[in-house]
Image (cartoon, rainbow, N blue to C red; front, side):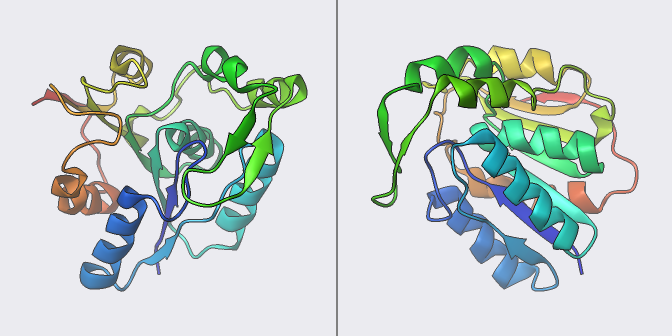
Length: 200
């Protein structure tokens, strides 16, 4: 039985709108797929250990959907475990993005849990950066140019040579995400992934 691991964004949770949409889609149309969406901490080593434990315990094959910071983690896992990954407005230049969160009291968007990042956590994060994609056919980048949080052009450059769908407008939450669910299922099940760049 395949496993779909949805990786939420920074300070997000399994209660995010997209995560719940994917869960409901799997329940309704693909009950043969085991859906997983763990609550992940913002602390890099803890996050990586939790994700690896889930993959090692999961039924194979494992498919990944990563949103925002979840896209960063999905890329690391894809390279490590040869999983196919759909990346939704993924965070790319995380080493430049994260320093502004150091030493600031952070609160999860969906519950009352709080966090405090330190410089040590930034050093940890550097060890999970993927500099070069070894299996470009494993990735599908889905991005919207209207992303107000991340520069979509960095993702287009990072995942050059991978399947890409880049839309004008939109936002960081990715408008009408559910349009892609059937195509995602086909992407995960396809044996031969065509490398393409489709701008809609």
